[in-house]
Amino acid sequence: MAFEDPLPKSLSPSRLQDFQSCPRKYQHASIERIPQPASYASAKGRFVHFIFEQLHQLPPAERTIDRTREFVAPAIDAVLSDDVRSDIGMDDAMLAKLLKETGSIITTYFEMEDPRTINHEGVELRLGVNIDGTPLFGILDRLDRDEDGQLVIVDYKTGALPNRDYDTSTFANAELYAALCEAKLGEQPKKIRLLYVAQGEAIERNVTEVIIKARAQAATNAWQRINRYYEDGEFPATPSRSSCRFCAYREICKADGVPVPA
Ligand code: SF4
Image (cartoon, rainbow, N blue to C red; front, side, top):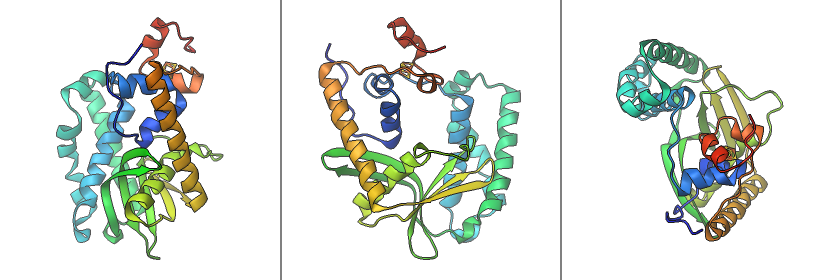
């Protein structure tokens, strides 16, 4: 069965993650564009990202905690649309919880770094490149220039810390962003900093040419498979407890006879 909808023009790091966890998820999200309802966690992530984006677009001297708190009210208008509120069943108690947690995250963030001292190369940096015939596009939270003059990929995380034995998937998105940066800017980022802003912990990893090449190759392999499945008219479902647990398409898959784990 041929798809009526076109193949997306490019592959983003998050859509690649969809595809790698389950090709059928990619089909529903990126080809058929079946909306994924917001969750409290995703709404909170967008809320906090909005505030930090506004903060880091200010001139350095103005990046104070008081100015940061001024962006909370605009975030309510920008992020908490009627659709989002409906998806997550937001009532006054939930809004109060979100505002309390956001206030705590802002306080914690200012204990992690002083944004007045951060030297950016980009905030919400749009990166579109073609690597070996694979069109890639993503928006990077921050690209910093550290005190040694090296580029650093910075990504805010509002969820739980990975456990101490965190695996390569923790850094997979950011490593692909490093490949995008190198292709777009002609300079290789040297480090990744994941800022777990709820817990006040930063996890760092160095970037090497080997890692960048491996991430770019994985994206190219995935893009070739995506094109093949698209031509075939079906993306295989690969159900697993971890992939299906928070998937928005559980009911669709069950109706299609996919053995989705409980
Ligand atoms: S419910 Fe499971 S099998 Fe279905 S799309 Fe989601 S991850 Fe894939």
